Length: 90
Image (cartoon, rainbow, N blue to C red; front, side, top):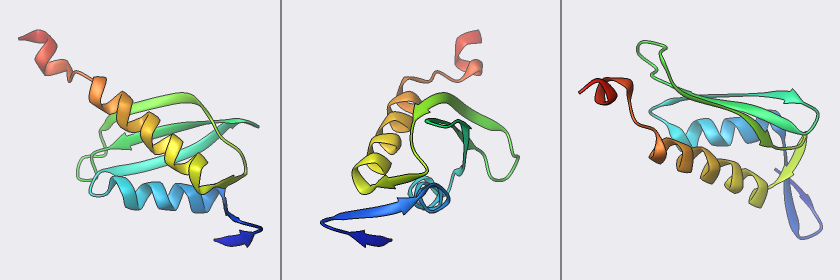
């Protein structure tokens, strides 16, 4: 991370790496879908099956640690509210 004033700044690819480490052993993939938003995808590393994909998460090409934490919390909140399809059929 680059130290800028009192804020730690991280580029988008490095922020995605932090999120990969955070969500391991699940797979994490992040990509920008617009200049100010991203798509986050959590997947099963063994099968490649997508668990959840969330579009339109606000982000930037350079973010501070609080921005990365906010994205992680948004993905975790979505994951907690997710009901797997096999439970809907029961």
